Image (cartoon, rainbow, N blue to C red; front, side):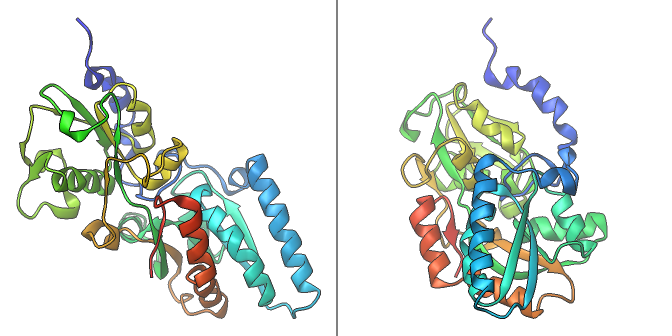
Length: 311
């Protein structure tokens, strides 16, 4: 008998069961259980190295004419966070700030290095993840400013239209608390299921009250959902994983979170710092540039709706 996608992924689900509560909506990399060291995280791709070199050149040129105010060190995920920071670096250099960005491939070390004050800030996470991390790890990180959000989208798998949903179909969603809730809320908004009253941003499959069809929700680690595209009828991806899969929320998704949705307002990606540093001059300069018209325009021109400025 041919196995369903849910059956084929049982082993994967078992292996990832301990990935735990540390996946973010933003998030852009491996799970928290796959944390890398700060030194390993600094090893970027060739493209990132080239981009960083260009950024350093711009900063060096600016230093020749502008009095230096110091260095801003930021731990970031690669896409889109480090790319956005690369655009901010020359602007900051004109103001006398040398922006140094280190790319991390996990969701734990960027918070740890800011907590230890080895870095000034990080840029990779949304507020619910930050709050959860603080509670579970005893850290003291705070939001210094919202920069963007990455809307969830429903993407075609084996079927090209939500109207084609039928009994027996499978829909793949992220399995961590925050991302799963967003996926289920988006499915509810498109008439695929109904959640119990009050489930909201903590919803899981156990909160599904009814389905429009006799379907199965397949829960996978967030970074693995895109791999289900050849097998599931539909997949629900957050913006960064859609980008990694070569998908555009504006052109390829069948539906996506609206800018005024509860999820969009809640899961804004932020600049996080250790408590007490949120009003430091360098942090205010960083946030101001990242929310400037120039960066807003860059985000809108570059990501085709997969990344949306929050201002």
